[in-house]
Length: 334
Length: 67
Image 1 (cartoon, rainbow over the protein chains, first blue to last red):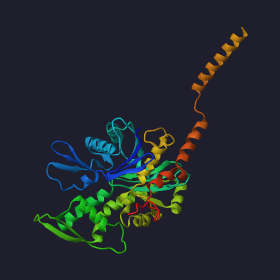
Image 2: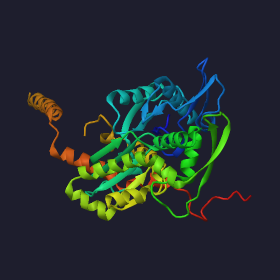
Image 3: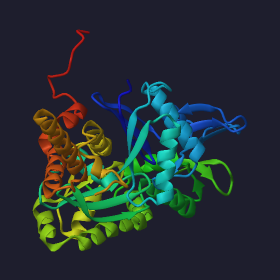
Image 4: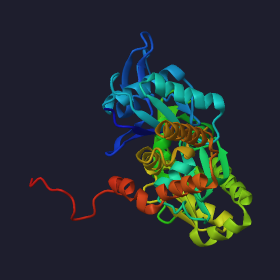
């Protein structure tokens, strides 16, 4: 008998929750393929370590961008391998709840459910990420009070107001922490004339990236390939430079939060001043982001206890209480 | 004769009962109960086991293998 699963199929990481067991898998959403034969060579951490360092016949790819499937076949194979790794075989087909961005189109939804069914799921239901995040962040969403959650993922940023078990207002943009990495890559290329890979850009973000000034700021040495000479070169980057480089992306995220606040009913708006907004998702860990959102909205911002796991825990709760929470699934009767 | 008549009446009543039950439109109580179940399943108490399953053990509560 298969144990049912909840999957947070993120642009950056994939987490799997098994009914009755908890989180059983947490890996980067990356797959490495042999370009000539199409054979899968590695997935997860192993494939992530290959990004930008592969010989010509190997390609390490992220099959999701902006929370949506960009390569259906590769995604299906990645889900199939994930299911195999948590013990699903052709004879044990579990029910699966998958978290997806609320802004995905009907076609994209169908691509996700089809990929999961073809990969071995008996039934695949979808749940909106901000709703799952609010459940996993343990917010009192069963009460008639305004709960606001900001989920900043690798490819999307979603803000939702939730009350009485349903979404009241929602705002989503297809901008996330990968766009911050891309902005850093572009800045270093443009201003310093060196090319750096996406993993190096991510390391720069983690080391000195911030959305607002923070105490104890340090500079960082970054090495890449000189675009003029083609030789390795090292430059020093300051936190101010990185703030300037990523300001456009951060502003888009902050503006989407502001738009969501503007959509919220007046009765719930007053709750936010007391209860604050909750940040979840890896992007929410960017230094100074909570302060910047708080400064621009005048609403307190709090970090969720488990920002990286909140979404899959919320979906996990839905798989534990499948019948009672059926109406939360996308496409179900509300 | 009376027994047959009573039998027929019982059967007819049972058939009508089944038909009526099948044609019954959902009452407002069904909606209330379903909504209540939905909210109960979302209460912090209902979620506790899932959240606790993911939290790291508190300091001093880790299992030690004696190494």
